[in-house]
Image 1 (cartoon, rainbow, N blue to C red):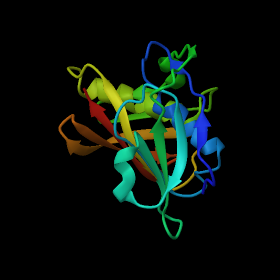
Image 2 (image 1 turned 60 degrees about the vertical axis):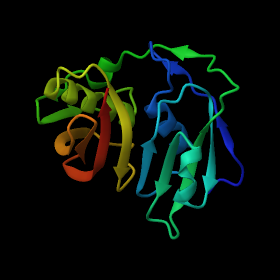
Image 3 (image 1 turned 30 degrees about the vertical axis):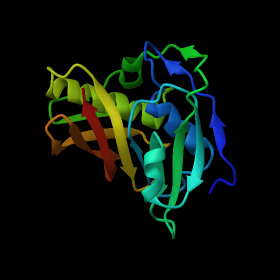
Length: 192
């Protein structure tokens, strides 16, 4: 639970004009919000700095650009990511995304990366899934990270595997996540 809203100072990555979901995930993890099973849903690309705050009902989710939740806690704990449109992102960092999964085995139905390397679990996972989706759907120009559900903390993952798990065409694609051979959750991407 957050007693007061927390501003997050996140940079743009590479040539993107939106905040990368991996940076938001990592920042929220550093705040200690993800100690058990948890999930995040992104409702739109985020172009401005953000603040994270606790809220009490999914009925209020429309006021946020993204929502994170911890369903294992009773009651479920909710955090909203509020965009601050009167502020500008002032930093940009390089992001050679392919380096996060160097040496990965990527097929049309699955992709596997064995690490670790200098990239975080979520950076490796997102790059790996994106590469698999590009292989599976080469006509789709861009893939956006739309959400994740994890049943445990995977920060120390060595082997990460994603596998095609269905969806609604390319509008919302599900991938199963395995870490060190164990199923740990589901990843959602949208093709645009």
